[in-house]
Image (cartoon, rainbow, N blue to C red; front, top):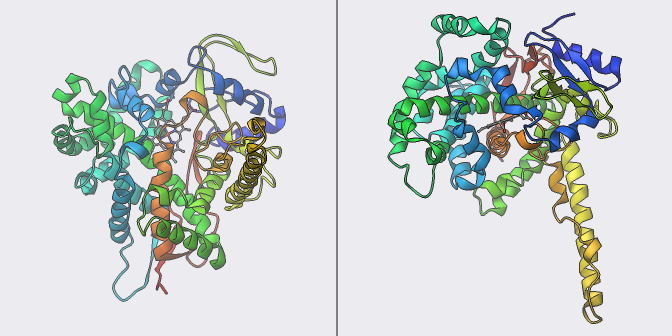
Length: 483
Ligand code: HEM
């Protein structure tokens, strides 16, 4: 039994217990993995029995790594309470500008050549970190290379180190972390480099129209954080951690998938992106990005196929409870869900083993047509009845946007990439916008291919329950000569 191969263990447990609850041993303790029929129970639950914040503290040890940021987690609540994509009006144009600058810098094609080969995952982390920070702190802070380097290494270290620390007894974790930080560096350097930019934002704290996510945080920041801006900065660094790694993983997997597509498929995506931008008067704003249906579908399929973790949406069980199949879950245990088998459920997905980048855009198109004919039918009924008494459209009124349920950010019991219920990821709309902006910019300007002899399906790298794209796998970016 290999405790580092959580995916393999989950597969084994799933097969052995037929999707009923089983216990997954791991470096970070035992997880009870629940089956598909229990997703609904967690979706409807609050934190009284199945507690998410307490579990997050247990698993990621933020108090040890970041200090006391969970007793008043207003930075997380700001993301939960705000609709970043609506509150920040200039979000998309600014992220696009930053993506253009970062891409040109990171894909620096040598003079006389027309292509460059790069290790994809680290390169995408660099680009995503910059674009994320344009939204988080604005320019010029998002371009401070020293800060970005430290921030990225905080993001890279924090998750695996939280798993390693979970190995140690509680009383010595803080000391082990201190020792590790002395050797490998800690968040402190990132905080030191970022604080001047945060201080700059405090000057604008009273303004009505926030420009960046830090402005939103400042609305809820207590006095003591305003007096000691490093405290606020720690929260920005923490949010960056949640934001950069997850989005880079999706961007990387999506680019590998794009490189495997036929020229006709890539051209279909390019045409859709260009038409969406044209429909907004040539401006790549949020409305335009919302019409990148094929990229949206690709990302959703990436999430269905390549989960970030073997088990997720874990909750600490505060008092004994029964699963829907009658299994008793004792107080003090940890429940979780396994995205891979859930996402390959043949009752939810046709040909679930097939990676089909257009799976969801096709479903979406089908739903849109159905919505349209339903609406035409309703209109017809309205017209028919308008002269002869009350209309009878009540039960026929369809949800005019039912196709949205196939979008990347839509939550469902069969799709748990962004989690479940009350604690599902509140940053997903922002993440989706950011990743689509970056992908669109790359697809419009580069042809993508694998280096000769390289695997077209680079094996992801797994550590305990987490999985990331293979950091050494490369991709060739060739500058397109536009027609
Ligand atoms: C593709 C990118 C992302 C993925 C796949 C992702 C995934 C997740 C997942 C699985 C959860 C746990 C849900 C659960 O326990 O049921 C979560 C929670 C959370 N995420 Fe994300 N996330 C992404 C991007 C972001 C970004 C960009 C932000 C912030 C700007 C963010 C902020 C948060 C916060 C604050 C929570 C905690 C919510 C709560 O406990 O109520 N995430 N995310």
